[in-house]
Image 1 (tube, rainbow, N blue to C red):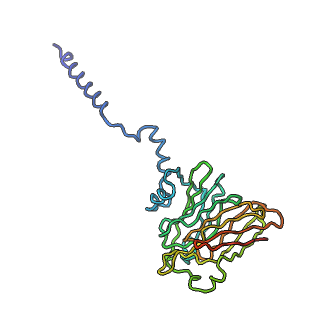
Image 2 (image 1 turned 90 degrees about the vertical axis):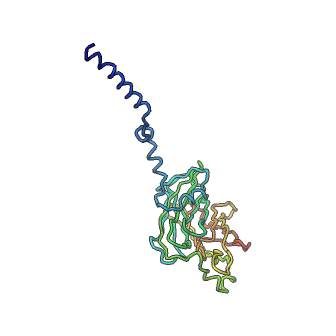
Image 3 (image 1 turned 45 degrees about the horizontal axis):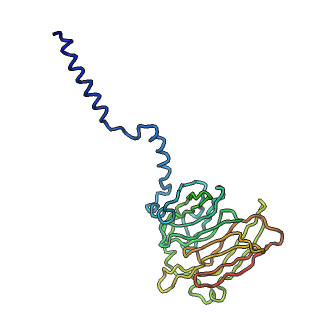
Amino acid sequence: MTPLALARPALAWIAAALTALAATAPVLATSTPAALASAPAQSAQLDPLDSPRWEDMRKAFFEGATVVFDERIKVVGPSVAEDSLNVPVTVDASAVPGVEELIVFADFNPIVKALRFEPGAAQPRLGFRIKLQQSSPVRAAARTADGVWRVGGAWITATGGGCTLPSVGSGSPEWQERLNEVNGKLWPRLDGGERLRMRIIHPMDTGLAAGIPAFHIEEIVITDAEGHTLSRIQPLEPVAENPSFTLDLRALAPGARLHIAGRDNNGNRIDAWVTR
């Protein structure tokens, strides 16, 4: 038998072994085009603010819903808050069409959710002030008509204690005389709409200060003179004392008046008219 004939069985055995090895070797998912295409979608869901509490926030507010981070949802506030009891914040989702609801929350506050806003006839944009217990991401989440929640936010550094300190008003007899008094004004915007700014006298106590129960406004409803609801704000305990709100409405008729109505958690009513 020739050397070549002796070598053929050995070559055949080696080829068979290599074929079997290739069949059983694991295939890396990242090597496939489909896996590569899905990688950006997965990484896009990482919290851009890198908060260790984001997963808790997602479960608390959006369980079972579709949530996406969206740079068009803006939260504007000071990078460093001078007063943790009064931190000015503006949330703006006006770049997103079809916003039906906005919620605002701070990851590290002891009472996380600060406010709910149904813009209705207003732009999905709201300016107000909140309390911060410590440095925290402050987020706005906008729900559009398709049920998707779109989230944006910003880190705000705070010295702390804003939620556990008593309000100034709770220690003054004046708030009892002026409770739920509304100071407001309407003026036209250059784009043809109307800007409403209002301030309501209320201590907005969180219930976290020793010996002082929770006492806060629960709902503010803005209607026109014909009784049509324009917007609804539901502030919660983390909203600052004597809360002020700025919102932009569609154009109103000359001489139009707005009715501001609502209540606090003790049943005290808010009832006022605002004109230009």
